[in-house]
Image (cartoon, rainbow, N blue to C red; front, top):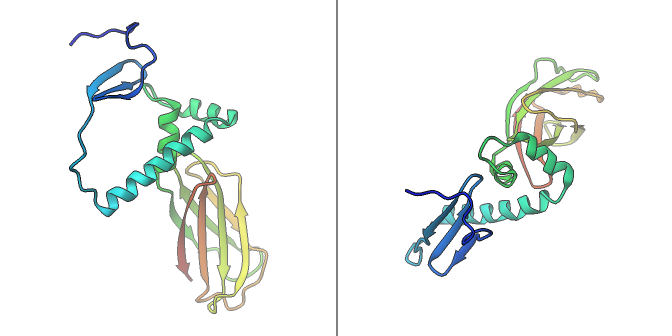
Length: 186
């Protein structure tokens, strides 16, 4: 197959024109026949994923308008990857709480709870909430200086004498768009 890196006929083309699709990659352009999906019956999960991907693409465009985020994605991209690809992956990647260590928590002010959480690139806050067995709020703690793969140590400020059967809710926030949480009963 012949390759051209300086094709003046297709320079600047992207998207679909009739039955032809122009796809630009970092090092090349691909021209292909557009897929025919007119008879495809999408499942509920496929529809939800397509909607989520559409939101990811719109979010990536908006996010890359921010020069600080743009620089951040430039640093994180891999060979052959655009910053747009990295931003879309950032939106699509599920956040997770890997571990909540309650061994240092006995219901006293000053006790520690250690949380290990991960995102793809940008975890911007971890919120830890302690609730009594009746569901009443004891306290909410927040960490906003998050780095990937780190352990976050939360020091409690309120006493919780009936800490047994209390609930710990950890919410990991991913920029302004998504979050995950885990729920643990002591």
